[in-house]
Length: 67
Image 1 (cartoon, rainbow, N blue to C red):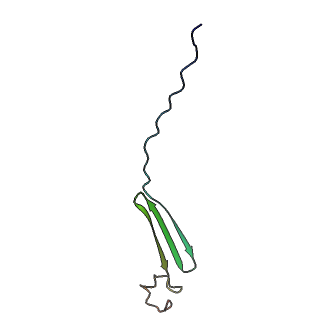
Image 2 (cartoon, rainbow, N blue to C red):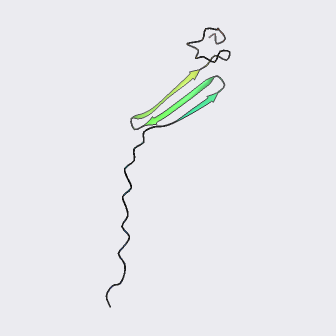
C-alpha cells in the first residue's frame, strides 16, 4: 500500500510589515505627555500648560502660569 498521507500544508509567508509610528498622549492637570515610537527610536515630551489660558508656559502672556 502506498503512503496516502497528504503533504503538510504549506505555510504562506506573511507580508513584511513595518512599524511606521505608534504613540500615546496623556493629559494630567496642566501637563501633557507625548510618547512616540518609530523604527528610529522612542521620543517623548512633557509640556506644561498655563491653568488660565491653556497655552504652553513659554507662550503664556496672561501671567497665570508665572513661574
